[in-house]
Image (tube, rainbow, N blue to C red; front, side, top):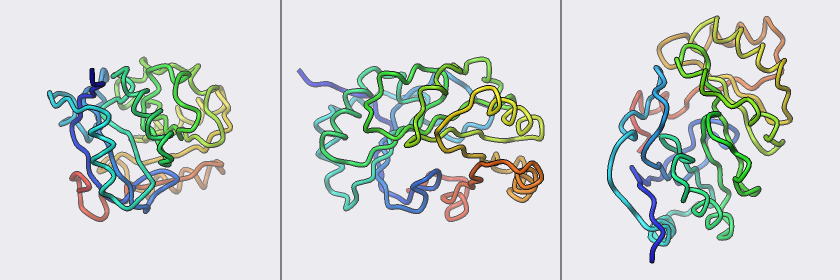
Length: 212
């Protein structure tokens, strides 16, 4: 009996965000998400019926000359078999990152996986879904991301950082076409925040499209 995951797409591109930005990476995008963030740029991954066995996924990614794999969505953890995929990729010595919201418990994730957790800011209209106890489970290998769409989002994110300190790297990212990168950069500098600002490199390269 095979172990399947519902997959929206598997593709090879440059990582556009977070610590591995610019590195050739295999993306495995799982289908489905319980959240409906206002700034979501992967709505096409909400629905679909494309079950693929984990063994076939692993066979497919072998064609690409990189050890970096990003498991993303949607919300990957909404599919329980995502944990089996992560375990398999780590066992096969891939360098694995997982992009997840802060709305699902992360305690069972393989310790070899680098977690990029995207806590939802007020402008997402989904901040009520955040599980703040997840923040304490992040380690230095992980990253905590705040997607900033307004000054309110920025101030809220600063407050969350004060309430829930973490050893993880902290990322601030502007919502594409809502605030400018310069605005966010100025706020960070003025506030003397110890965070890493990032922009979505793939959108600078290819516009507001999938990085394929």
